[in-house]
Amino acid sequence: MKRIINEMKLRLRAIGENEAVARACISAFIAELDPTVEELCDLRCAISEAVTNSIVHGYKGYSQNIPTFIYISARIYDNREVTVEIADTGCGIEDIDRARTPSFTTGDPGQRCGMGFLVMESFTDSMSVKSKLGRGTTVLLRKNLKPYAEEKTCHKG
Amino acid sequence: MTHVDFIERQDELIAGISAEIDHHTVVGIREEIDRRMFYRRPRRLTLDLGSVGFMDSSGIALIIGRCEVARSMGATVRLVGLSAQLSKLIRLSGVERIDNLTVAPCER
Image (tube, each protein chain N blue to C red):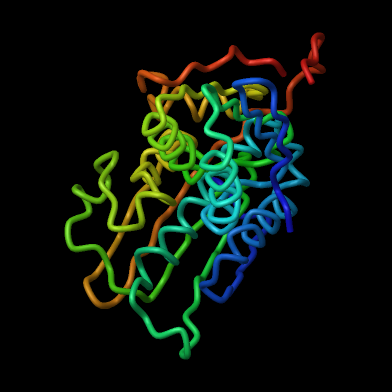
């Protein structure tokens, strides 16, 4: 039975500046696990996509005057599994299968290319999406970090 | 705040991006590159990603868009300075199939 060894909850304003903040927080949170560069980059990238989706799609068309939030909840388990849940209370996704289709986007094509879910899926070990129209969307990302490796003989920058 | 350093060489415009490329930062980067592209009208745009510390799929949208701008002026685009992580994202996106884009092999 796996045990939770650390937890973090974050509530961030749904603004572009916080894409970088969310990445930085996750990096700091999992640093104790000494992830590889690749694992760290993968997770940072996946989280960036999820947070961006909430800002760009979840809260699309919402008034700028009323603050909207993204809720991130991360856990580390004793088997080196990391889970990160990214939730918003935005418009929700009507058709999740369609949203997950690469190159489908409701955003500005100059800024988004409809790859968000593909990246999240490819760069983690599992991804699931729960969404209710008018209520919001929650993405759950799970990544199993490799066991502490025996010192690598060849370290490539 | 500037994120892009330009080097102009005959028909080539080299844009060295030094920023984390996400949905928030990509707008400024795109505008800087396009402004210089329309002014110089190079035959080739080289995007140097060697100093990019982070990039998500917003960077892919940036690349696709610059290929379109380049195509509109009969130019090509070349990507250089890819890290292993960036290469992985590039491969996943399939942008290598864009006909006026060449991707230099991973350098770091």
